[in-house]
Image (cartoon, rainbow over all chains, first blue to last red; front, side, top):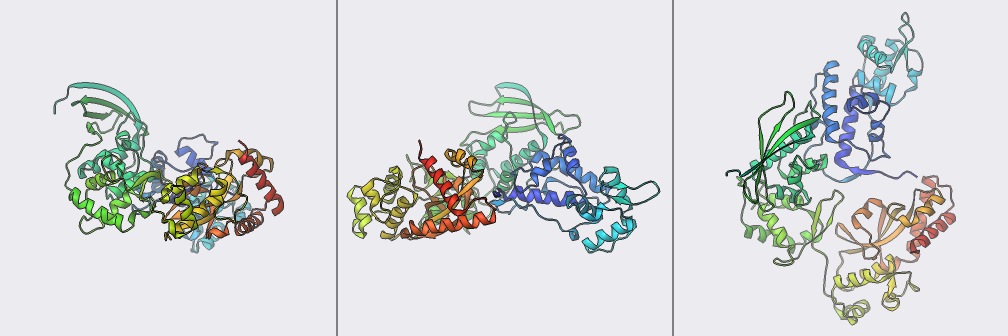
Length: 180
Length: 402
């Protein structure tokens, strides 16, 4: 008996655009808690990106996210500077109450970091339950994103994921990776 | 303008919100749109912008209001640059200029922040700022306003921004039109003492923005039919008087719902018989814009607190309930007389269908039961239709208890 949650079209637009950008940049729940200076064990993102909860972002959140997304973007070499305007809809956007529908992100819209993050963390794709080489990971992500990616495209990204604890490496000698 | 009294105060304010307020303040003062005029077009209370510009108040401009204000001020973007500070430490100097006017000089005291003082005048409600926008005249604005009323523009509810945009889109006023005379005219058409109170502003939309509309009314012609005759016989001569009479009647089930005059005889009614009567009255008098609606809404403990225990007993979050009301153009009219808030009610609506006044009995029950059957199946509700109907009856009984 799911009750439909209605929120403003503007708030929903912001939620979905943040979701898209953070996925593209490989930013997860824990990162968001840290960016927003909230309890590390909390999950504000879970509430905001839930279609059964009316939570939404406000400007103080958006300011912190814009600063953090900019840093991450430069770290990944995308070199995009974000402002709150990047999260807001165009001015002529219609103000109305809409059902809170969180967009499903297609890997074809993403780069390597985003695709790996989407499949590994957001969608908990079963592929990552087993050990794989960088080449296998690159091929699998490429097949989902409809791109021809190679192992070298993923070396740094996998290293980052291991550092963040969302990937584990089998051993020093064996470059095999899976979800922890 | 010499200051007489000076007061120095310190406060903190969310930095990005303060920057946003400055952005809008600059835009509106450059265009010569006063704080009151901005608040009015935003559809909020008269001092909303004045409060937002006051660092000692907690009023913030949220994303919805930001986009709305940007539309009012014809801005392309509604946000300042990002800000490395979370909170600004503000030093505020208040100068009393005269009896009505205060000037604030604000300095951001954070390390590394721009130390240039920011000046803001605290405006009175009727303050008129100098403007380079096109003002037109009060009379010309009124002439077009009357044309809109005559053409049925206000039969639908309108926000102040919608009305402003209608003026801006009109060749006589254009995109650079200043809202001053428009606002003065809206207030004139609301003013019961010294204006022509044609418009109603008692409603707000789901974003708490004030709505303006011309309430439906017509003279009841006694020779138009049995219902018109019954109303005029008890001294009720207009549709609005009839609405009030119906709304004031006790809320009770009627013995014979098929008798179109049952309300006059039993002096009570429910949502179905009350609104069917008003629909028939409108039809008799040739007002076809009024529609009788059967709506299915989520009856829950929030909108109907009296059923809280029944829902808890059967582990239900809500139960889809049928309700009758009227629709005129884009808004709901509810004269059940049990305090239904039409705006909030729309949020709980699951489905609605237009019906005829003779469909308030068997058809209504059938439609409701069919909806419940689909709802049971879709939501895997662990009750049969018969059982759910009994639960619903329990809810109605709980509602009737005082």
